[in-house]
Every structure is written in C-alpha cells, then in structure tokens.
Amino acid sequence: MQNHQTKIHSLEAGFVMMFPSQRGGNDNPGQREGFLGEVEDILAATDYLATLPNVDPEQIYLGGHSTGGTLAMLVGESTDRYRAIFALGPVAGAGQYGGDYVYCNVRDDEEMKFRSPIMWMHCVKTPMYVFEGAEFGNWDAIQTMDRRNKNPNIQFFRVPNHDHFTVIYPVTRMLTQQIREGQINITPGMLEKLR
Image (tube, rainbow, N blue to C red; front, side):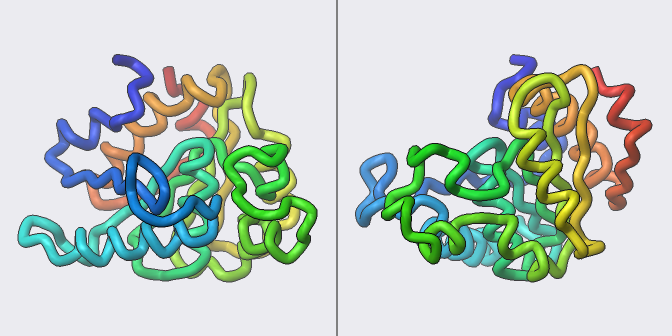
C-alpha cells in the first residue's frame, strides 16, 4: 500500500477526493485530446465538486502524478480557483512523451505549445508545487522549468532518495498533514527527511 496512488492519507484525514475521468477515456464520450480538452474536463469536475454540501469551495486543491502532474500544471496555469496545485513528476513539454498521450500532430508546434506546461508558467496565480524524485524520473524536465521560471507562485522540489514512483507516498503524507494544519510550507530540509 506504500505507493498506492489513491492518496490514502487524504482519505484518512477526512478529505473529500475526486478522481475525474476525462473525455474519451474509460468509455466516456468524446475523443482524447491529450492535455487540451482534458483541462476543461478537470475544470468542469471542479465546478461540480464545489457544489457538494460537504465541500468548502475555497479549500479545493488539485494534484496529479506523471501525466496527471502535467495535466495538473496545465489546469493550474489556466485558472486561479484552486487553493494550491501539486504536480508530481510532470514533463515540461508534451513532446517529451514521444508521441504517447498526445492526440494531435506532434510536428505542429502550436498544438504542442498548448499542451506544454513550460509555455504557460507565467499564468500561474495560485501556489503551485512541483515535485520529482531525484533517483529516476522527469527531473531533467522539471529542472528546465525551474531554470526558466520567473513566477514566484511556482516552486520546484527535487526529493532525495526517491524516484518517480516512490516519491508519491511520502510527499502525499507530508502535504496531507500540512493541508490539515492549514499552512503549506515546504523546505528542502523537510524533503531530505522523507522516507
């Protein structure tokens, strides 16, 4: 259960969680677009979530891992409605998927630009935290974004002693505790202690 992606810590903390499926996936109508229309799907799911009686619409966080991390960044770059965004192991540009997960002409620079978080970092208006394990994963892509970033709302963190997958459990546990306490404050020293 240690790296189960259902974010068990958040459920144990009593948080309401939503895992929306998007267009064209899981027998849903429509066609997959690969990081474009799916942004709208997440925003629509958030609109619904905010109407539920047991949800505080001012306390909605967004998170994702790997392709979900890339999508979380793109959603966070398009709106200021989330309290914070957590992206674990995203890529900087959709082309880094080598044609996988992107349902457009990968040689069309405009199409790829729309699907690439690195192109829209200047649009982020709420706190965004980007994590990756130091041992294996997309750290090179994240480091590229970190170097180019001029937006103080975005922070990038390399998590020692973890990889693209083992980073999920300890980071989720840390974030759950901080959300419960009402303040997110992440330091490199905290990440060094994560096991």
